[in-house]
Amino acid sequence: MIRKATQQDLSQVEATYNELFDHEAATTSYTNWKKGLYPTLDYARQAQEQGTLYVGEENGEIYGSVILNHIQPEEYQKIPWTFDAKPEEVVVIHTLCIRPSAARKGYGKEFCQFSEEFARQEGAKVIRLDTYEGNLPARSFYPKMGYRFAGSTKFHFQQVIWEVLFCYEKQL
Figure 1 (cartoon, helix red, strand yellow):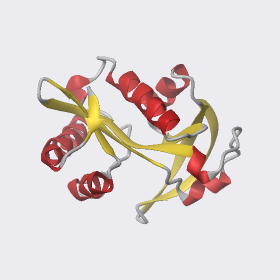
Figure 2 (cartoon, one colour; figure 1 turned 135 degrees about the vertical axis):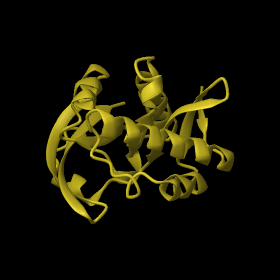
Figure 3 (tube, one colour; figure 1 turned 180 degrees about the vertical axis):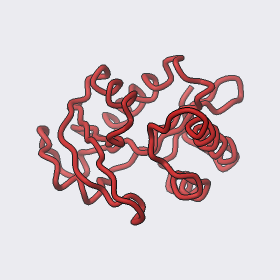
Figure 4 (cartoon, one colour; figure 1 turned 90 degrees about the vertical axis):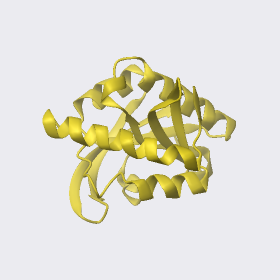
């Protein structure tokens, strides 16, 4: 079940981030996320306070989270989007994170479907997202979910490092 996050969920959301960081440190890093930099408990707290953080929960355990809002990074202006929409008609998927221990159970698909339904209820015409160029699993997953590759550009990640992100969109 996916639902709006509460303050009581924040420690488990942080635990999902940390599980991912630990897993990537021991195997391969696909996200390019940095422990202590992004995503963090404070980042999740801000989103929860803004009402934009959603969690997936099963049997009382949080297996993942996502932030959904209308905030398009400045770099999105460089992308040749196919589907034209006013800013308020675009929902952006941010920081979709599934615990590695919960991988391959369909939760990513569930979060995408939830995000799309959320966007429709918001009156959005388009849903957009970006992912790190090295995130091969995500770059394979989103097209299977009907997302169209729109382009890539350099982003100044958290104003600390430069990275290339691939951008995707789906018309609703």
